[in-house]
Length: 229
Image (cartoon, rainbow, N blue to C red):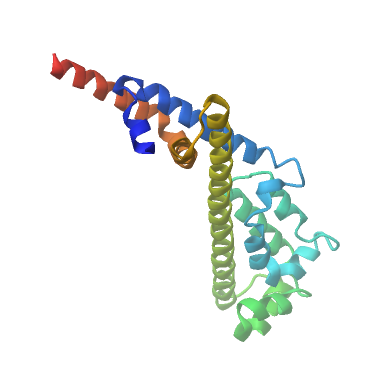
C-alpha cells in the first residue's frame, strides 16, 4: 500500500517531495552533529582504532604529555581536523618523542630485529651525529611502518564514524517521519507507517544528491509532458 501512496503523487510534484525528503535527511544529520558538544558525542565513534594504532608509540607520546599522552591526537579527531593533517601531527609527535630512552620500547613493536640499531640511530640524532646510509635505510623503513599503521588506524576510524553517523541519522529520520505522519494523518494506519518508514530510510542517502536528482526529475517530467502533447 505504501507503493500505492507513492504512485498517487503527480510526476511534477516529485521534485517538491524529494526536496522535503532531503530536508528530513539534512535535519537528521544535524541532530546527530548536535551531540558533539556533549563530551564529543558522535565524534568519539571510531577513535579507539586510532588509540590502538598509537599504543605501541605511547612512550614517545609521553615525552610530550606524560599524564595524557593521547590528548592532542584525540583533540584533533574530535575537532574534525583533516585526516591527512591528523596523521601528520601524530607522526611528528612520535618522531619528536623518539630518543635514546624510548627507541628500544618503540622499535620492539616496529622492527624488533633492528632494535639495537634504532637505539644507536636515536642516540646519534640526539647528539647531532649523522647516521650512516645503512642506518638511514633502517630509519626509512621504521617511518614507513609507522605511516602504514597510522593509515590503517585512521582509515578504520573514519569508516566507523561515517557508517555509524549514517545509521544514527537514518534512525532519527525514521522516527521523525513516523511522528510527522502521525501528526498530519487522522487515520494513521499500517500503510502510512510503512510509507513514513520508507521516507525516513531514504532521507539520509538522498540528502547529498537531492538537488541534482530533483532537477533531473523535473526535466524528465517536462519532457514527458511535451511528448504527450
